[in-house]
Image 1 (cartoon, rainbow, N blue to C red):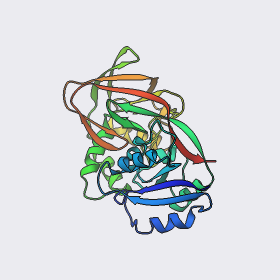
Image 2 (cartoon, rainbow, N blue to C red):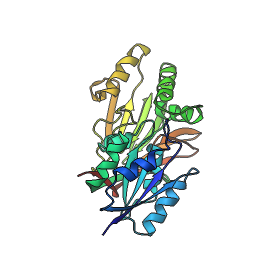
Image 3 (cartoon, one colour):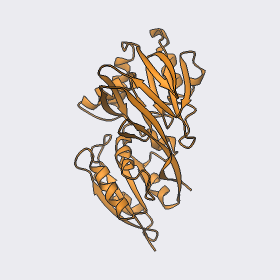
Image 4 (spheres, one colour):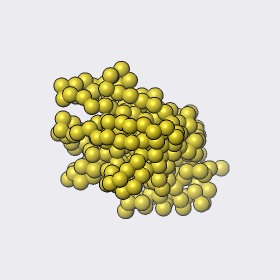
Length: 292
């Protein structure tokens, strides 16, 4: 009996022409195993609506065709259910797909579904928000807010913003309560990670494991501008753990104490908080399709 899969295509993710996506999916997917349908999002939040519907209809899987924002929206509707999340990465960074070792080549990622298996992974709750991969309130959040307002999407736009802002972004001070312990942090970048990277192999949490029931807190401390190339090189080559400007710790629950407007990002999408922010782990709460 064929298993039902719904593909949700975000026509606005990343850059490039999306007109052949449906054709490629139909050509690569094993029709003996799967009965497929293809949907397109037309507004923010639409992917969550479509995945919730598929879950209620007991679909085997829902596949997000997009970037980390699309993965977040799709997974939000599936968390805690028997319906699995699949990913065809077509975004600017594709951090979750890269962490799960899903090919960023479109046709290869579709073919992987034919021989995939289901694994359970953790997710995060950021107050009432769902998070699949990373939540940040430092430089990464600053870039996410600028990127959302940029005239064009894609990797080149992201890199230009990072290079333009990296040398002038100041450090900030944060008060955290980490598993009940008060911690003061001054940092350039502060990320709460389930998965290891922002995308494009920029690894911010080298020890993050999506199945360990822990949140990785990644801190890039204050540094002189002369060390910026050193930090960028280490992040892009999964070597941050060797830098004296990097610290990491793990927790199951974190409270970010906040008295003003706090800019953040959740899976690359900008958010703003006006009060304290509670970060918690939801162990093994999402079923995902990975290589078999």
